[in-house]
Image (cartoon, rainbow, N blue to C red; front, side):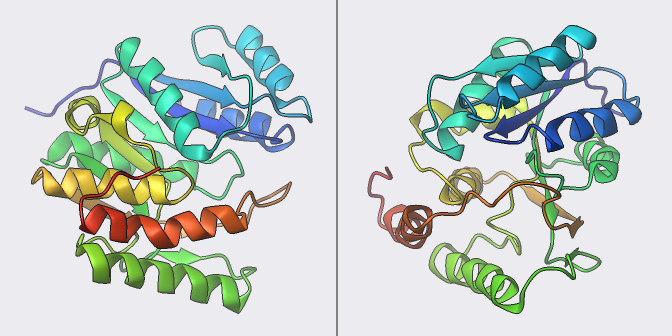
Amino acid sequence: MVETFARIVVVVPTYNERENLPVLVGLLADLRLPNLHVLVVDDNSPDGTGGVADKLATESPGFVGVLHREEKDGLGRAYVAGITRALDEGADVVIQMDADLSHPVAVIPTMLDTLRTGDAAVVIGSRYVRGGSTAAEWAWYRKALSTWANLYVNAILRLGVKDATAGFKAWRATALRAIDLPSIHSNGYSFQVEMNHRTVRRGSRIVEVPIRFEERAEGASKMSLAVQIESALTPWKLRFGRKVG
């Protein structure tokens, strides 16, 4: 019997994404997937993204929800807040997705079908499995940094995941509860690595499906030097069982 999901929530953290967010919500609505909902987690964006999110929620009640946070304190903290809200509201599946249009909405049905028909705890939209790719607009050094980061993480943690830093994921709610999400303190891209690490340590299965990762449509990347330093240190902390964050 093929599994059905009663509630699927796409959690979208935002900070200065007022141009991209309405486009993303429109693309998600166009999927016309039963039981699909969107939860925007806005970190008090100076550009008014929170107000845009509220307008979208008013126009699409029941489809779009908004969680406002007082300050910007990292991608990991935004995801913990959003995923916790989604689980509290009865989500069977939680999808992590960036607001910058770099993640292809059209792959979501494939990710959900993979969850339904197999034993995966999480399905990753992967740039580095067969059929996956990155945007042609990406500079060579960005591609090199991304490739090196994944080699680095896997050399230390041996996750067996080709795109260990990916942020486009579909999780079973049971898997998220099992990894004790509230106790994760890493931020930025290392948050994704720590979630994968906890999943693998529990013996749960991670499956990757190919995507084409696009360049962001509008706005600027949120990658900072502090995020890069944390991302370099986190695998070692996880390897030796030290507290992250």
